[in-house]
Image (cartoon, rainbow, N blue to C red; front, side):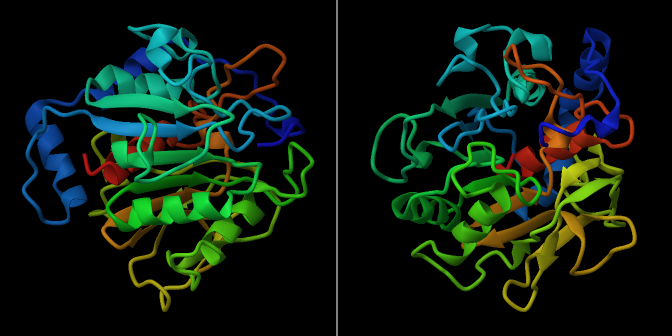
Length: 326
């Protein structure tokens, strides 16, 4: 999302009633239904309910709050529970991703942390916030390039079973004016990481700026992201974002789940999943869908999370569950 995405003409109107309804209907399914919904995400393994929460780390080391962005679940970092230990709505925590975080927290099945600004992404180096201690790593619209060591750490994390959730934005969305925007940063991770520089996930970010669209979900009735524990995904919103080009010859596991209007197959994909080693990857072409319209004072934000043109909450939450092998 950019600072000039006023084209939506929509104020942030998330309400307690909306979030409560979403959490009641999606995030707390009956145990039997939840177990059944999780079976595909286990790739054929026995779906057993675990007492150990799924561990999700949100990144804030790559200028995720630069400019008008606010891609954090809470200003309390690393632990959002320090701001409010029993959150009920997106306003319980401060950040444009707080609805996402609160929805996961309220299930009782996830523990959430943030890697604060000034830290380095690591894997296997020790420390409480090392990627080795987490199941899923979320990087929403990075605006600072990963270092060589960080790119290797992220790739090793996925290769050894971790889940990576990447959210891009459009070309020239450089919020901190360092010469790097999220499409270029994500492509750089794919092509210069010290582990596999030959298109490891089977897709790349298009260097495009698409002003508006409402991508629809593909007909994939068995897909665990489109049909997961948090509900059925029918579509999403695109408000100044981009898409992905798939290259199944490089990785046969790559799959486009939603496509831009008029596109299908390997071009115009708006939401993509893939695997690498024993890990999983998901990528979204715009930050607008995960924006809940609330955040730190001074930011102009929009409520894409509850936008009726998409089912963005279900998509974000189902993807998190799939990446975490929940």
